[in-house]
Amino acid sequence: MSSWEPDSDFVFHMPTKVLYGPGSHREIRAEMADLACDRAVIVTDRGLRENTDLPARIQKALGATCVGVFDDVEPDSRFEIVDAGAAFAAKLGADCLVSVGGGSSMDTTKAISIVMTNGGSIREHLAVHALTGPQTPHIAVPTTAGTGSEVTNVALIKDEAARTKFFVLDNQIFPRTAILDPTLTTGLPAGLTASTAMDAMTHAIEAITSICRNSMSESFAVQAIGMINGAIRRAVEAPEDILARGTLLSAATMAGAAFCNAMVGVVHAVAHALGGVCSVPHGIANSIMLPHAIHFNAVTDAEAYAPVVATLGIKASSPLAAAQMAAARLTELAASCGLQTKLSQVGVNRRQFQEIADKAMADGAVLNNCRPVAGPEEIVALLDAAF
Ligand SMILES: [Fe+2]
Image (cartoon, rainbow, N blue to C red; front, side, top):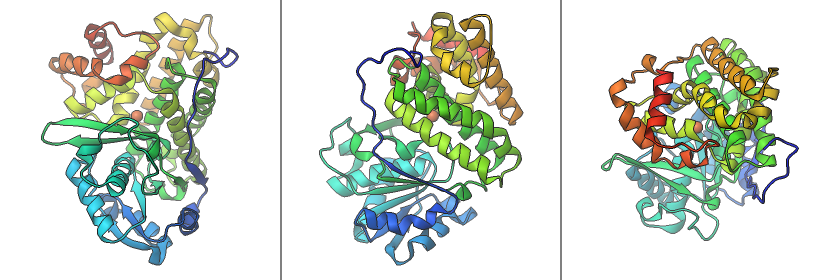
């Protein structure tokens, strides 16, 4: 769907209040008061707490309204961590949760808010659109610019024993407020800056081409692509540049709103599998697979990339040639930011291709891809191209 085509019926959810600005984390007490809350627990990970001053800065801004810090968040937190976080916050009489960190901290906090509100264990609440009312208010303070979790309605958590990731998808778990303060992201290392930004780039491009796309998600995604394309190298090369950092931060949030409403596609299906089978970091997996997925999709639906091509300023003789040029441009962009561009560079083994392909085919994201994926053999071919 290009911008001038009529939409099918759609719903666009973005209930999260977004507060943007250098130093905006200092507004957090006022935001809590807006939510009629006065006892906050910060949810973060120990690495961030020990290696940066970010949780401490939020704690200072909260002052006496911070009643505790839960710092046991892990990458894709386990059920036990979620339940422990909820027990910790309940014991302190918390009425508000403040996540400080990346996607894992925000997703864990969404899950904790469910257990705080509904009791029991998160195991009993692994459902889709089953919650019946507002959950414990959650203020998200992202310290990376990538996942967009601050404006999405999904929480990813894992069952360690079953080696399986689960998710809760529910409009009641949108954070109530997202505080986007670029001064909190200047310490992010170059590699993470680039990979998380490419995750956001992938959210935007997959939202534009998804079969669930609509004109509102497209407008957020197009804006995000232009901003990421314009700011990513500057943020990598000059980490203290607040303008570049802020551009990436708000772009990642817009890309999050875009994919929350339009969904993602085959790149994310494969990236989730690459994370599960070979532990390839999410942003790097997306960055490597994105250009190859564009080649794959453009064979049948090159027109879907028209907004991407236009935003990247590409002119070519046909929609297919333009999409292929966009793919090449994205590979160059990733490489210029120091990211790996081949699966063979990130510890993937050809013998794992079949398992990755089977897992990707079982991932819901593949269903939203603009070109239907016929079977695991097409994923194996994609992996082969990206090797
Ligand atoms: Fe992602």
